[in-house]
Image (tube, rainbow, N blue to C red; front, top):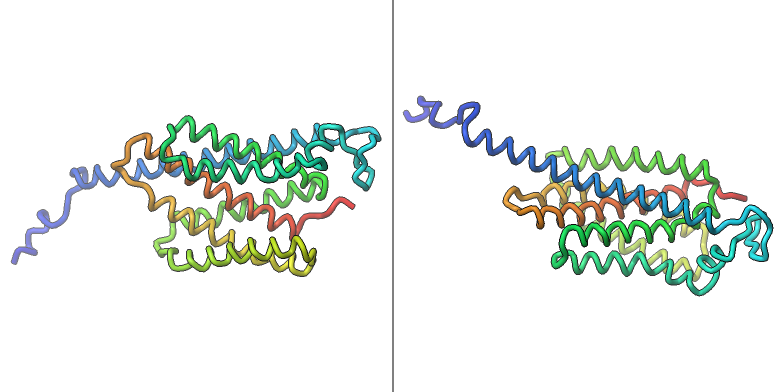
Length: 260
């Protein structure tokens, strides 16, 4: 009998429930926009750092630091890419990302932002060597392929009502498999194994893009204060940034044209 009074069971338009849901939706959009803005700016810093370091490292005239194919390094380039300092260049981004991951909960939002920007710049320095290996046209082409792929997969992860948590464990297992296989291939130098790693890597990071986007979305809580929300946005941006960079590198290994 009570079902007859439908005004009691269903909130009217403009009630507190509707306004609360609208506020949550607006807050979620603002949160996700912050995540994507941080990630995009991080990618821009990485690209600018990579290109800037490459221009400083390569000489237009012949020098004593020849690395083949008519490419000559400046003193700066030799110090960065050939001398023992190259290990610092390779390991510095790893140190920065671990520092941010373990310290973010005790850092202010501006400090966390600064570490993220520093990390993005260090990754750019490390990735500047791709300009020595691949043609510039193929780098640009693969970047846009990566951007389109990433955008579609992230949109799917954001909008799908299906939970992607079930495939998360498989993707993490695949990620560890890629890391182990890559370390083994350092000593083997197998082109076939590298091809398999790249193919599997594309699949793994494609899946992680959708999975991580959904997970970052689910991390949103309307009751968080601005500091917690800011930290979440930065860590979410870092996660998607890593997915993008790794997807780009895997695709570059598959479709990039080497500068012979």
